[in-house]
Image 1 (cartoon, rainbow, N blue to C red):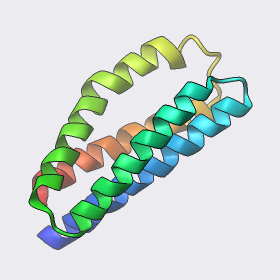
Image 2: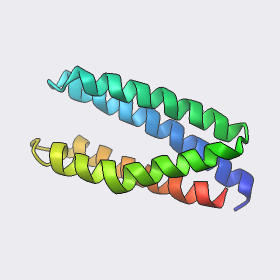
Image 3: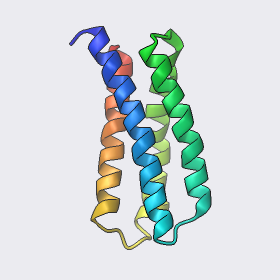
Image 4: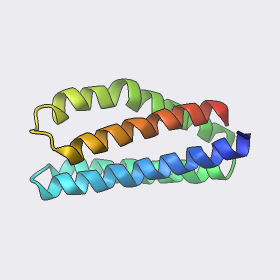
Length: 116
C-alpha cells in the first residue's frame, strides 16, 4: 500500500475510535454508567478528531502523536480498563464487541502510523 493509503487509513481509524468510544460511553451511561466517562470520552473524541484532521492534512507530527496514542491505549489503558471495568461488569456481547473493535482499531492506528 502507498503512504497516502496508510495516511487515509490512519485518519479513518482515529475518527472511528473517537465515534466508537463516545457511542459506547453514552450506551453505558444509559445503563447506569458514570457521566464522567462520557465527558472524558467526549474530550478524547475531540482530540482524536483533531488528530485525524491533522493526519489528513499531512502534518508530520500528527503521525507520531497517533502512534503515541495507539501504543499508550493499546499497552496501558485498555488492559487496565479490561481488568478494572469490563471484567467486574457482567459483560454482555456489546461490551466484548466494543473492546475487540477498539483494540483492533488501536492496532490499525499503530501499524498505519508507522507505515504512513
